[in-house]
Image 1: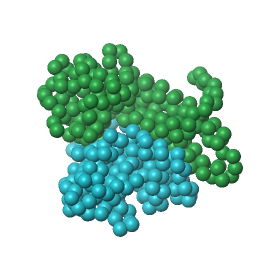
Image 2 (image 1 turned 60 degrees about the vertical axis):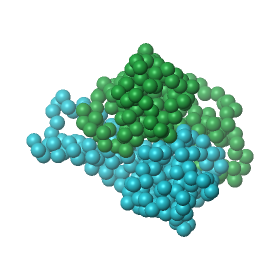
Image 3 (image 1 turned 90 degrees about the horizontal axis):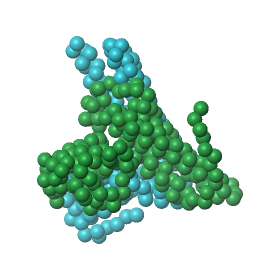
Image 4 (image 1 turned 180 degrees about the vertical axis):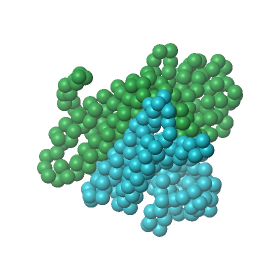
Length: 202
Length: 198
């Protein structure tokens, strides 16, 4: 049986908890698809850990809502928040289910590659090569989201995964980056990272 | 062999559609909460029905494929991914249900949706915008800004645009995507920033 930690009430604003749950749940979907696409067990393991974090947030948020409701009117106003939070929790569960396919060695049929070629949002793995225009740069400075519609969702550095790296994170030679975004954008970004495209346009 | 190839292609198409639709639903569900829009919430419910049927179709396709014993595990993996997309679609439908039950989405919900990394934003289109008179496909909004146009508000009505829908002056575009693309979208829609919506 897994070990479940006791969760004690902490005064954290509902807005913050909800924001974390929304951000994490959506990030987890893309990370989970990436783990299946690239058959990466360690990345899948990270998702299972994130799922536990979302569970904890869900408990904290529910407690916060209970404390905040003083009368039936409050309860009516807050029930929607609780339902939406539960839905983000469900989404993170779905992501963990996908990750479980990878960690349990079930594996995904090779046609998964063809599937991810056709979906709207593409996922790519790129390695930062020596001499690349992005090596040594901070993510925030690259302005990837507005320039190429690309977002770096995870970095594999040495033996560790950095999930959802911050803007101030510097990209290093040898980093393996998982990106999501528009098909052309992620393709250009891969070329940029791997050195066959010299410069960011625009 | 040809028919087997075809079946594989159909499995691919089905899962692509399941994945894309489940994510679209999530965007629409958050948008329906942000705007307290019954129309969008209903759209999410319709899509949920569509996903349910598609998911059943997908599972049947996968199960009746002529796969080898070695391939069985890989097919199970695909089926599990399909189940996950359906679960995401369900979650989106549950969110939209809040709107349909007439519960005014709490301010804290709207705030969280606006402040999230993947957000929903509105932008109004002014006459000087390069978007005017272009179809959604020609406008390449996603390529330019990273935001997907989900809904167009025109004359008080909300329209779910298709690729060949034309963008007109005065339209309000409701788009989802990375928060970093919001400014770019607003500049594209209203270059002089003469029109702003909240």
